[in-house]
Amino acid sequence: MQHINPDDFKVTTKIKLNEIPTELDIDTSKKEEETALDEVQIKLSKKQDAMYAHNRYAFLICLQGMDTSGKDSLIREVFKEFNPRGVVVHSFKTPTSNELEHDYLWRHYIALPEKGKFAVFNRTHYENVLVTRVHPEYIMFENLPGVEKVEDITPQFWENRMDQIKNFEKHISQNGTKILKFYLHMSKEEQRKRLLKRLETPEDNWKFSTGDLKERERWDDYMKYYEEAINKTSTDYAPWYIIPADDKGVARYIVAKTIWQELNKLKDIIEPQLDEKVKANFDVYKKQLE
Image: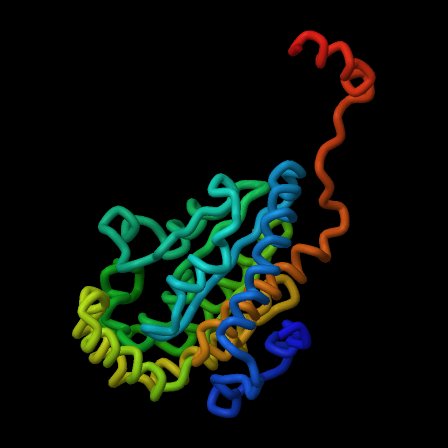
């Protein structure tokens, strides 16, 4: 597992999703995957503590993927060793009536991480150029000027949204928020197996939704729009990583290692030093406490 290089999954040129494997050809056991992940978890936790105390940077982790791609379990496992005060998870579902009274990025702005913290977006602002492209009728709920019917939503509308999203990401990155975007790349066959498991395993029944089957019928449309969104919005300041997700253990490790690699690049992150006068009086303070 150590030989896996996060840069191999980073989108730096135009990609075609159907040419990218959904599973790595590596010989590794589940135990080896878990051990490798444990090691990165511990390193991440220690570095995050220093980042929290340093209080200058924030990290935004964006997770996208089809239903059953493993987003929830990845969050649980990758951030398991984090101090709870240092990470906040936001799961963006159908916009509420209050959220629809604002522009589509508003609810994402107010969920951005504070300095020193991580925020994980489980589904992200990219839903606004993915789900809404597959179902453009959803745009009508936004009550936008000049959009009276679905036919008013032109190709330029989506181009504008892509630019708005890039501007949003550029703005927050220039103000100290590091952005990492992960697409969990799962095969359609693997999704079929996972949906079946939800039906066949009583304790997983609650996870099943008939809506998953309806969205599965639009698989090709989703792949088309994911590919376009990734190609148009992977930038130096907010890169996309395409993570092979048929093996959940490997996917978790790659995401964790990527975060660790990027966090470790910030060489100025150090824990604050105590005032020299305070340090010089340590013996005095010890006597007071004793």
